[in-house]
Image (tube, rainbow, N blue to C red; front, side):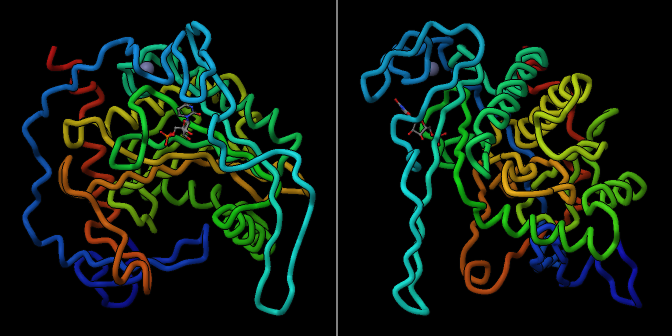
Length: 351
Ligand code: H2U
Ligand code: ZN
């Protein structure tokens, strides 16, 4: 925590700067004087079947548009039956005056089933099974990156995040333009390199590795931390220690370490409120077309909505929609709570 002047950053409202997107966030730690209601009776574990004959994603089942899934035994990728993006559209930009603009965008959307087992989540899969998911993510970036400048890998988990199906799965959307969030990160990382002659997230990693207050867990190749500028209560940034631009650039040790740390992070999330923790997570690596992107550092964002229990969600509304993002619990407190959770999944412990 910076100790600037006499100001008490742990008790008083202040703003923190997010150097990745160039935006500020309001932090109101004095509001956390309210009692902490984090602990909950363990929720009865969902009794999900290993195979659900009605699930669109289970092996051998028919999907909503009539196609049938193969009887897959590991991971399975298919083109989304209801894609938000379509391939091979003509290039078109339309600006009839100085206000109105529109542009065509070609792309594709895919669904990635992480496991044939309907009842599992990434947190409950073995590191070997998670490694297969990591390999698929990297393959998707390699393949789609040849055609599109941005390949967005992500997972929406939990009904609270709008996830449509509990079967463990993620998505990839690839398109021919840089979307808003990566656009800002590209701009800020480039400006940082030009100003400091170093890589923003590599410098940040050294700072956090020394400071230690925001680290959630780590291994030889990766660091998982609640960023100094986190917006979501238990937001996590996962960064490789080595300067790596994209997922396919990870070596085999880094991939193995990644599957280990993913499991650790997700177990800690589930253990926090003894529930299957909802989140949106996704990868940001350098754009895959259009120049030199050495200013980039690969990283994953985890944005979980829960605040105080499995049922209390943070809403991004009001001041946050109209002015700027705001949080109560300090990122340092969130990191500490996550650090203190067990490394053994609560459902395994209960058995
Ligand atoms: P979520 O990750 O948000 O649950 O979305 C699942 C995706 O799966 C969603 O984009 C696709 C939906 O279009 N889907 C299919 O492509 N085929 C199906 O039969 C069901 C769902
Ligand atoms: Zn299923």
